[in-house]
Image (tube, rainbow, N blue to C red; front, side):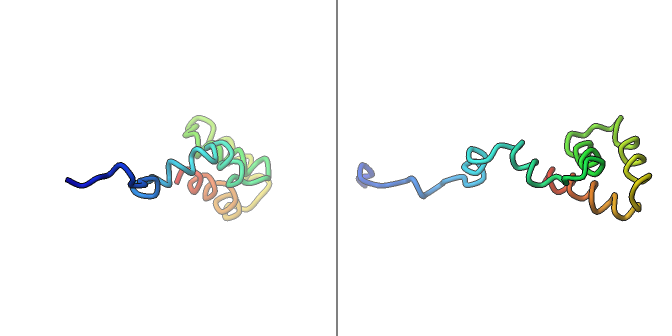
Length: 84
């Protein structure tokens, strides 16, 4: 019989994704990933939190101040990336 009493299993079968969740909460990770611009942040948060009722008004408000490509790259894409 194999004696496992002195074996160190701490580095074997470790779920590093779970370990990272303990280190960094989803809110902190989203804070780093989402844009700083308030309009783009609103768009990204709508995507991240699946706020379907507010996404179009947020997009329209952002497009009133920025080009559509900027809204896509500055709001939608960061929201999608935050979802993972």
